[in-house]
Amino acid sequence: MAVYVVGDIQGCYEPLRQLLDNIAFDPAKDTLWCTGDLVNRGPDSLKTLRYLKSLGDACICVLGNHDLHLLELVAGGQPYRRDTLSDVIEAPDCHELIEWLRSRPLLHHDAGLGWCMVHAGLHPRWSLNKAIRRAHAVEANLRGDEWKTFCQQLHHMKFPVSEPAKDDPARALFSTAVFTRTRYCTQDGFFNWNVRTGSSSNKKEKAWFKHNRLAWVDDCNVVYGHWAANGLVAGQPHVLGLDTGCVWGGSLTLARLEKGGCKQIESEQVCAVQAKDAHSQPTVVAGELNDAATFAMMIDETHGSAPETRRHAAEVSAESGREESPESEQVSRVSGGDLPDDQGSSG
Ligand SMILES: [Mn+2]
Image (cartoon, rainbow, N blue to C red; front, side):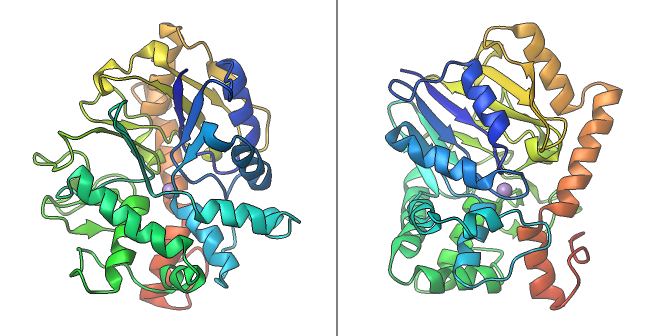
């Protein structure tokens, strides 16, 4: 009866299955949480979706920006050059998979466990209850009859940098961006949707979980993905960041969640597999859930504490900055209009 949470899969189906084999995941007893970005850029988006859907109630996924991009494509949006979503779109069961995907939540909260999961982040001024209300409002749009209209808005419109008024239709766009794209924001809730690596030049902007006053902090711990350039964020008071960039040549990381919070996330609760590139067979870098030594090694590799691995982290960060185009290409779309794929991505 364990709850496991895995970081951004992005179609890396083989590493996922290897990771689940390593922990002897049993869907009859265990639950798998996924931090979103289930699909795109990796080789096996279709297999990944089919497998996660087949797990039924044993799997809880929140939506990430790449998952929303898939919904946007089905709703008539334009594909990006590096998309690897055509296998899903051309699949005979595409309709069933899309219906399943658009009914996934943006936020999942387990009160008994004391953990909440989102893809990217939360607003510093949102309590947990307010965040749940904001997520429900977006989910109603995605699950409703007008879901394609909403996805077209997500695809074409610019995200507000701060929260619009209650009756402003852009509020749902802003909430969607908070849950699925957040990295840097100010204490007052002004979000920078463009900076994704390194640090922001605006001193008031910090990583969303690093502000002094966070309205949700007394209500739950938060597990998230999305920020591969930051690598594994563990041992923090309130957050657990699990996107270790499998699709960029990093690793796919899984943790076992328990009551009591992030400081209890110790070595024996985390394991990871690494795929040299997204198309090769994964190798275990920290496959024993109780092997503290290999876990420490993995932190070095993903967090960049040794010179060799700092370089690796920099490569991952540069790569993700250049390639994560459902974000960057939206930036180019709204600011530059018809820039080619690779331009405008530096934000
Ligand atoms: Mn993401």
